Image 1 (tube, rainbow, N blue to C red):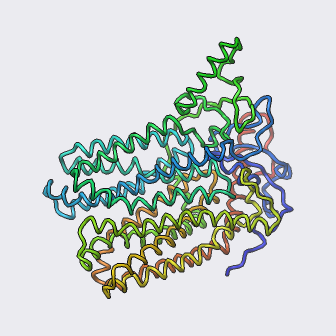
Image 2 (cartoon, rainbow, N blue to C red; image 1 turned 30 degrees about the horizontal axis):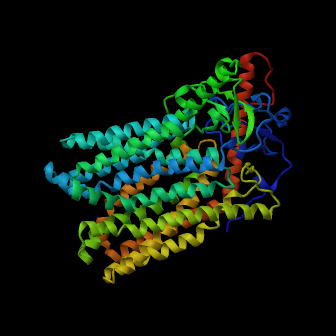
Length: 591
């Protein structure tokens, strides 16, 4: 195993530190409170060793909780109760369900659409290719938008596009309209997965993050199993248009519930959840109703209400605190390059590449099920749809189990270092080897993934009883999603200031590699044979294990180097802003 140098952050606790405020997602305010400055960085002046606070970028910093009047600053990471957190996570898990569902539910209606529009298989397959390309590209815009402008605007925009596209798909009568509307459908639904990781980073500390990411990942993996069965049943009994009407009705209902009940969580706008967004449209309908009800009661009792609501009393977790109105946050055009920039970080590139390779093999296995099971076991469309269930159920159970295990392993590592863990309060990761705590479960899980992938093709080649490949699918789904869930959780831990952007970068690579897997699996099965095709997939997973091993060995150093680099950039920007205001003299030691 590669050695971890003493230059890594948690080996040296004697260096000066610079406090920074996270510019976007804001979760990093609590996760990474201090940034350690290397003793070799002579360009930092002696004055920079004193703790200061300033924004890393021009993006507004999270509202200072010290501004809350008549109350002490909240000590907990999030003001949301456990019940509220569970509801929010349930809603984001349901939202994440739509993107993979839309892709899989479409397969049973493809033959009918090809027949109705007189299309070749190549042309109808092009609607899948464009869907997956947009599925990877759109989150690069929407993920950044969610980190900078808020989760609620991002969700509302995404589901408005998605619902409108489904209505159009149900009514369209041409191939051109089908192609364009499928692209819009993909753009609307694909960002929801990256939004979900951002929301969880907003409300959950690293000590409890795994348990919340697990249910969301379970929803993402259950959709590919249920989608073909749902699509097949609807198409058989109600016609192909019913598939899109079903998606439109369900997504429209979700949009209404979300708009009424789900609050804003992004920390650069609402802090820990106690800060009241200034814009009315950022607040859920139930919150507006409660505010108006409270205003009426206040008027009845003859007590005035200050303008802007700054003096209005609010109860959070049973404590009466003053409600602070956040300053307005302008909606900015998202910068998709931020997602690509994350790929320049070595630890992010390793994690995202490994996730992409795992999902490539998973998509290839899923894509092969209809053709292989139809040829070997002579199954009809409905029976083939049911064959997706073992893999989906195994994946869902794997996500739930792995989330709990990740939290347990985090607490175990903290206890071994005499670090007290309070799930409601964030733990600084500066001197904590989060890479080791997260990645230890990965290695046995990836071995199980390889052990169930490599023999899968041999089982089909020998035409064994159908129960054997279905059992292998179940175990493979369990191990694959548990492995990817482990890597995704670490990715959020490493980039708490922009979790949706990081997840968007991951989604980009995952979807495009998945599209590649779907495109080449038929050629591989034909040219390599069923047996050696899946042996090759297992070999790719083994290669990803080597990448993750490098992250396990050197990840702490890479994280420390990034932290120091950000601190230096922030210091320089602070000096520039000071000179522009004319209220300071530039330190000659700062280049």
